[in-house]
Length: 318
Ligand SMILES: Nc1nc2c(c(=O)[nH]1)N[C@H]1C(S)=C(S)[C@@H](COP(=O)(O)O)O[C@H]1N2
Ligand SMILES: [Mo]
Image (cartoon, rainbow, N blue to C red):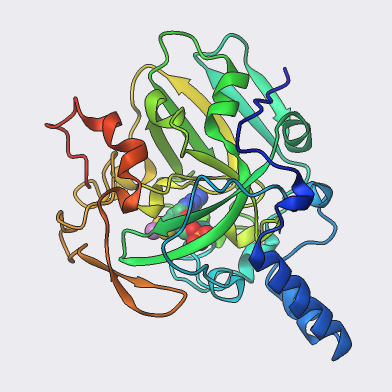
């Protein structure tokens, strides 16, 4: 099945190269002129030039999603990561290079017309990529802005053809303790899983990410396929997805199993609802180090607030 919806805002790729990409190219040109120091730095951050999907980048920017602050440099975001499979601290980017992102396939199963195992490059060939500049807010009260490339999660839902009885979409990360030392710590409920409702999954903001900064994303970001739900705390944005299951009942997620009082199912960003151990009123912005006020739904209320109008008794903000 070919998923391609032409949208009114779509413009020719050639007319849509974002400013940050020009800056990157300029830096690259300077780097080449001055030696290969900058080109080397790019590789050292985990960029993989041999990635078979490299030719799909850069994709046209979708300017419907605008930022109110500058982008965070890749030098920062690619060296400060949460990816517990590779360790429960932020400096995992080198270890994450052990992840083999080809061959890679995604199992789509559960309440669907037909179970499918889709090779990642076959999936990419069926989908139209776009770039979106999104804010990301970690529950630990830091935030960043990233130019992600990918496609709406709604496109994958359409491709999966869920049955009417499906109410939830369950995502699972790879499981390979040989390369992921965190997964040898057996008290964690591996593999990492996350769950959203069908309504959330088909909201226009829900984005499956394949690339960042105009190229296939570095492994530490969750290559070759990760979710980004910009109105929710970052732990919902599951990395390195191998399985997408449609279900009628809501299974407990990795974090709900581990610390149910601190990391719940809904996890929508709200500055007025504190985490049990800290305030969520402000956040440390990784680009500048400033403390900025946190916004309800991370500033995306116009897109998502209506999803929750009938759910006032649910713990929507933890
Ligand atoms: N599989 C998996 N996905 C994950 C995590 C993780 O540890 N494992 N950490 C989450 C958290 S808490 C955040 S804040 C983001 C961090 O994404 P980044 O490292 O690309 O900034 O990934 C989320 N997705
Ligand atoms: Mo996070």
